[in-house]
Image (tube, rainbow, N blue to C red; front, top):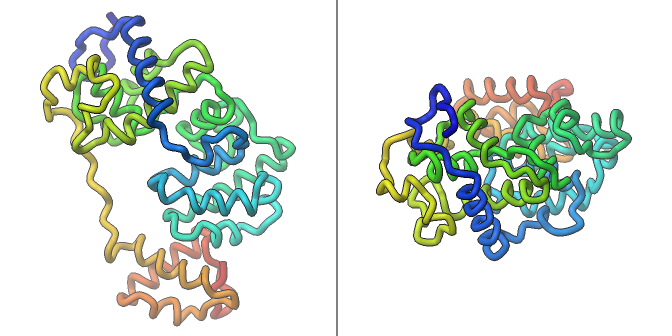
Length: 305
């Protein structure tokens, strides 16, 4: 039995290696039949293509990423291609994916790859984590999905699957904890190819079947092993996170101003940008944050990317 981890649910006794292996095999077989045909998962996708998909998919549904990712890769198929452009070009191409600072980080990442790695996306976690805008999850995801390496790819979907299957709680917490990392490490296969397959299949299971609300337990390939299901789906545990409000928020205001500037080749007058939002004080504040973030630049009274 594994030792209890501070902050973890009451121990039930860890799965045996054989039990985990059966779950991993069943999940991988399910993925072979039901995994989505996303363009960055297809054979021949470059590590750069995988990295771009992971940055675009942060806080954005994958269904919204396919089109922008395809356009991005057509325009900038390598890090060198993007690095040769100005950062504003990346912001303009980001469109309505949301959280446009990710575009600036991706541009900075491309510049670092071009300068420090001769334009080749590095293959190790330690190198990837040092790139601008690349955190723990993205570094592990690139190691696994782009290079077939062994890494614990721990997003919300994977954490929720493991929380239900082994610890028997309804939902994972809003932030990744030490207990989450310890649990994921116990589930990580030793074989690199098997570990990479488990990473993508468990993530897909959490995205399509073991969802936060109304999970499709009758369609789950590992239902027979799930302690949460066996316990009658208790509702205790971490609450389901609610979606962030949008209407009337600073995020919406920033998006309106940024879209106005993005679509104006000759730039936009500051006053025009401020009057594009009904609340003047909020527009002034949001324009200031866009300028501070480097998403918009001001030249006299004209705003440009």
